[in-house]
Length: 109
Image 1 (spheres, rainbow, N blue to C red):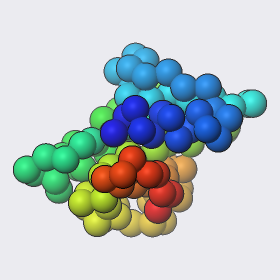
Image 2: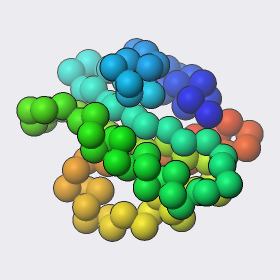
Image 3: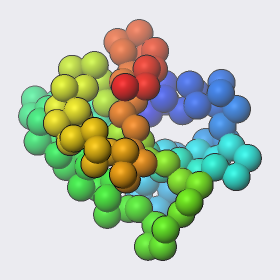
């Protein structure tokens, strides 16, 4: 999943690194930076997505980063669980959900 997401970002002109200071994906383009956490297919989808959000929040920069966005990268089966965090919260924290399909396609949700 991370490889498919990284390839998708790179095709959009992002420079991508994986596993940077415990963050699954860090991408840069121009003056923008994106920090993303990913979870694959597991038996406990809801719990794992909750863990993903906790990891993402804990790994956000200590100081406000005006050009930063944050990504939640999940398989199709976990999109519903990822959307349980209210949209207004995700918007306020600049969090975007990215769905990675079985065919490695990526869709912004």
